[in-house]
Image (cartoon, rainbow, N blue to C red; front, side):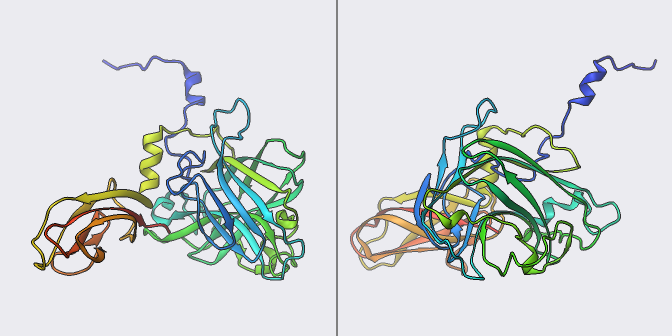
Length: 346
C-alpha cells in the first residue's frame, strides 16, 4: 500500500537548510580573546572570534564586543570599531578592514569555477555616525580574484540592514583543503592605491586600484564609529533570515580556530632529576597544528621559570588534537599553573 505524506504544503516554503550561513560567529556572540581592545594600530584578531582587523597606518582604534544592537532582531552583541586617533589624509597604501575568512573545503558546494557556480548573497546589519559609501568585498585567495559591492549608510546612528548579491564566478575553483580560500572584507578606509580606479563589482583578477573605489574614510575623525552584526553569507540570490545557532554550537565552531585554557600540576620529580609534563587535549579538533603561547604562569620549583609547549620528538606532540608540555624541574617538587592559547586561524 502506498503511503501518502500528510502535512502543510506551506511549510515547504519556509524550511531552510541548517548551516546555510558560511560565516562563523556572524552575530558576534563569541569573544574568547577579549571584549575590548584599545590602541589598535596593527593587524590581528582582537575581540570577537573569527573577525580579524587589518590595518596599515590608518588611525588608531578601539574594537569591542558591543551590546548596541538593532532593536527587535534577536541580536545581543555587535562588533564596534571606534576611531581614537584620526587620520584625515591617508597615504596611498593605507587601509583599515574588518575581515572574516573561510576554508576551501567548506565551500565546494558553491561550485566556483564551473558553469554552475552559485551566486552568493551577503546580508548584515550596520550602523555608523558617518554616512556615505562603504565597500564589502569577496576575495578569492586561491585564484587572486575579487568582487567588490558598495552599500550606503544613509542615516547617521541608525541600524540599517544591507543585502548584497555577488554573481557566481565561473573562473577559478576553490581548493578542497583546510587553507584560506575566501574572505569577506569590510572596508572602513583606504588610500588611493585602492580607490583610484573603477570599482570592480563583478568577479575579476585583482587590480588593487579597483578594490575600494568610493569608500569613505572612517578614520578621519575621533567621533567616528562603526558597528556590524547579523552577518550572513549564503548560496543563492535571496537573503534568508539570520541563522541563529545555540551558543555551544557557535562556540565549538570558533574553537576549531582558537582556544584558550588553563593547565596545572602538583608534585613531580626530585630536585635535578629532569622534567615532568603531560598531554593537553583540545576541546575540539583544530583546523591545523596551532601556534601555542603561554601566560599567567604560577610556578613553584620550576627551573628558571621554564615551561615548554608543543615540542617535537618521540614523546612530544603538537597537532590538531592537542599538545605535550613539560616543566623543567628545579626543586623538590614541580608545582605550576599556566594559561595557554592555541591559535589555528587561517
